[in-house]
Image 1 (tube, one colour):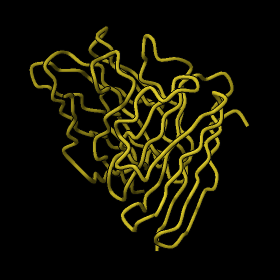
Image 2: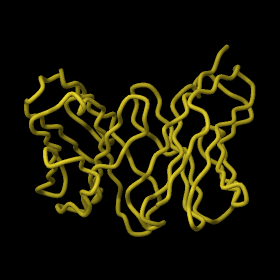
Image 3: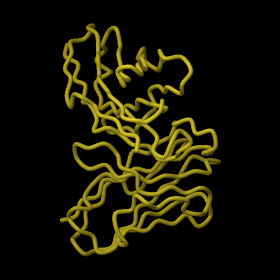
Amino acid sequence: GAGVSQTPSNKVTEKGKYVELRCDPISGHTALYWYRQSLGQGPEFLIYFQGTGAADDSGLPNDRFFAVRPEGSVSTLKIQRTERGDSAVYLCASSPRTSGFTGELFFGEGSRLTVL
Amino acid sequence: AQSVTQLDSHVSVSEGTPVLLRCNYSSSYSPSLFWYVQHPNKGLQLLLKYTSAATLVKGINGFEAEFKKSETSFHLTKPSAHMSDAAEYFCVVPTGGNSGYALNFGKGTSLLVTP
C-alpha cells in the first residue's frame, strides 16, 4: 500500500517478555519517527531516524527500549522485559525530509501493545 | 520549551451547528502550529498548519484556525458540523524551535456530533 504500515496491529504479551514492533514507511521517505500514545493522552515522541541513524532518541523512556533502521527503510522498535506500564499504542510516522520542516508527518494506524 | 494546552477534553455539538475546539500555546516566539485529526481506527492526519504566513489558516474538510498572538491561541473552527467530523483532534507544536522535527501533542479533544 501507499501508506505507513505497522505490524502487528495488536500484541498481547506477558510481563517480562520481549516485543518487537515493525514499521514500514512510505517509499522514499527518509525521516521516520516513533511515538507512544497512552490512553487519554496525545502521542509522545520516542525517537527519530534520518536515514539509518537515530538522530534523536531522547524520548525513549529507558534502556529497555531500542529501535533500529538498518537499511534506511523499515524500522523495528524493540522492548525488553516489558512492564504493564508499557501498554500503549505505538505509532510510527514518516516524512519526506526534515529540512524546511512542514509539520506534516504521515502516520500509520499503530500497534496496540497490552502487557498483562 | 514549546507546548500546547487543549482546553476541552470533550466537545459535543449537533450536526449542522458550529464547532469550536480551543488550543492555547506557550512559546517565547511565534511558533509553527498544527492541528491533527484521528478518526477511529485510522492514522493521525494533518488537518491544517500555521507557519507565520496568513494568521487565518484553512484546512481540509472545511476546518480553519486563527493564530492570535495577543491571546496565544490557535482555536479550530468549522461553521457546520457533519457526522463524519466525529474524531479526536490534537493541537500540535514542534519542539526545539520551528526547524525541529519532533512534535509536541496536546492531550486531545474528543468531538462528538449528534444527529
